[in-house]
Length: 80
Image 1: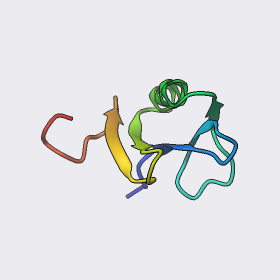
Image 2: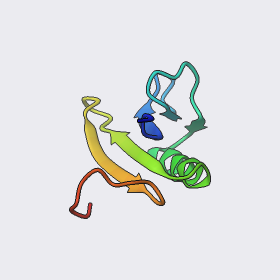
Image 3: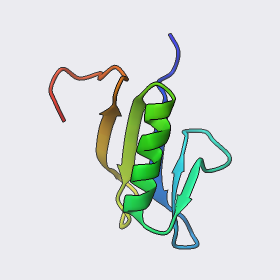
């Protein structure tokens, strides 16, 4: 089984937001706002066959939102 295609959007030390793959050394996306980074990361996942998009809270770094980008396989049966 191959690991899922995943990007995590999080705030960088310089105040910008990055979309980075788990274990990655370099960001796939760097944008000025979290919304821009989410949109760009979503587009990357769509272009690469779908996957999981996770967004971390700025305050504490916990994942606040996780979406399956089509045509990825949603690990949960419920929507959301």
